[in-house]
Amino acid sequence: METEADGEVCGGPEPAMCSHPLLQPETEDQTGDPSEPETDDSADWKETREPQSALNSLKHDSVCKKTFSCSQCGNRFSTKPHLKRHIRIHTGEKPFSCSECGRAFSDSGTLKKHMITHTGEKPFNCLVCKKTFLMSRNLRLHMIIHTGEKPFSCSFCQKSFTQSGSLQIHMRTHTGEKPFSCSECDKSFTHSGTLKNHMRTHTGEKPFSCSVCKQSFTQRGHLRSHIKTHTGEKPFSCSLCGRRFGRKENLKKHMKIHTGEKPFSCSECDKAFTNNGTLKNHMMTHTGEKPFSCSVCKKSFTQSGDLNDHMRIHTGEKPFSCSVCNKSFTQSGHLQKHMIIHTGEKPFTCSVCKKSFTRSGDLQKHMRIHTGEKPFSCSECDKAFTESGHLKKHMRSHTGEKPFSCSVCKKSFTRSGDLQKHIRIHTGEKPFSCSECDKAFTESGHLKKHMRSHTGEKPFSCSECDKAFTESGHLKKHMRIHTGEKPFSCSECDKAFTESGHLRKHMMTHTGEKPFSCSVCKKSFTRRGNLRSHMAVHTREKRFSCSVCNKRFAWCSDVKTHKCVGPMETEADGEDCGGPEPASNSHPHPLLQPETVDQTGDSSEPETDDME
Image 1: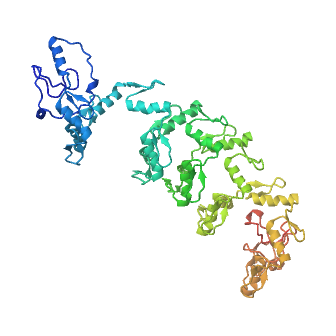
Image 2 (image 1 turned 180 degrees about the horizontal axis):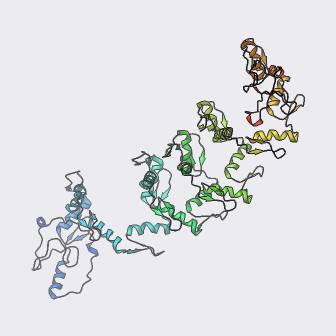
Image 3 (image 1 turned 60 degrees about the vertical axis):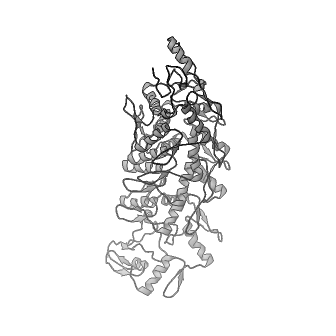
């Protein structure tokens, strides 16, 4: 009987070199390195089988002797080739080199496995799903997916794992061990991979890049999630409401809306949250911690996402674009809100008045109108607000903070919206256009007011006389006719006025200021309207005409005094007559029809002489 030369005899890992007549000793040159090298733990081998015969017993006694001893560590081996291979651990000798990449190995079996990485060969096949693997070990691990076997159990919580390495990592949740420390900030982690990802916050490395928009990410998982914003893929669906999500984590968080589960509670105020991250962010409201600081303006934030959003103020980056109108946004949330403009969807409805909203947050704010709740209070004056943003803006009235500065003229503002409007003075941008007459405006509110000139809408009505106005400011001024209120008083003579523009003009009687000068004769006037009337002396322009006889005049007073037969209306061309005119509600001239209040422009600088 001959034994095989691979060292797999008598249940032990290696055969002994013996003088038994049944066993032929191996010569050194006959021994090849096995394709899967043996370990040196043969000393741990123990007999576990009953001897089946005298021959087996004799075989066992003779084969299991280990006659070759390592001079370095005393470890013993049954064959000289095994000892020789072991010696390389001490000498560092690696005689087997890869012909492709030059990498060296201590035994031929390891080289053989390494060569598969160059050839692409995957010799181990799963019989169930036909998946192939480079190494048998990987196949064995893979098979657990099909068998469901989880042989490694946690002694604390009995949770089971498919691999011993996964169990080791899990045990750190019980022991609190964090063996991987950052060399920059001494922060520790339970996983080496987590440390690797963390180090990118110091190096700025973003090795994972989107092939569509070239945006880069620190982690592969973040890139995978980002790709779904391009593909629109939402593979995870809620079984209760059908809402779909791009990530399983978002679905899990969403399900808590239906269950009402809030497992994470604040130790300071007992407020509860659906996820741990929200609780961590909330705790910063108690500690005041703002660990994320802007490198440009040094402003600090409680969350890294808020810092990322803030940085786009400095960079001007708007990475989120609308697929319908190509409008760009700094945040994905703003794009999502914008898309509702195109779809018209308003999924959130008030249970009291049935008003619908595009966002759940808007509905929550709206409900406070019905409940009267004002949960945000000022610590300085105890004034309360329905929204946290309103409180934040209000606080600037106490601190005097104006954090938004114009890069052109350095003027500062308390709100970012005011800065955006101001910037249009420099750029000349008028993004809001009228669909009827193509007139453009710098603000959406101005367009809204302008549209009423086309629709004839007058939404603001006087409760006293039922007169209607296109703007709330016009109604406010009109109400002073009924109340007699004159809130603008002259500091020199205590004369009072209903409008601030009238007071400004009156003040010129005290200062003697005449800011409007004739370019021809240099004569000066206190009002623009007076200058316009004066210019007719030089130009002989006749801007005012009688609607009956079509006779034209240089001044509107001439239109009033000229004699014409029949009912007449004048065309004043929207110009001020330049002199005192009778009030529109007292002694109206039959030739002149007074203009309605809502046709006037900004009355902060009125052109009439009716200053009281």
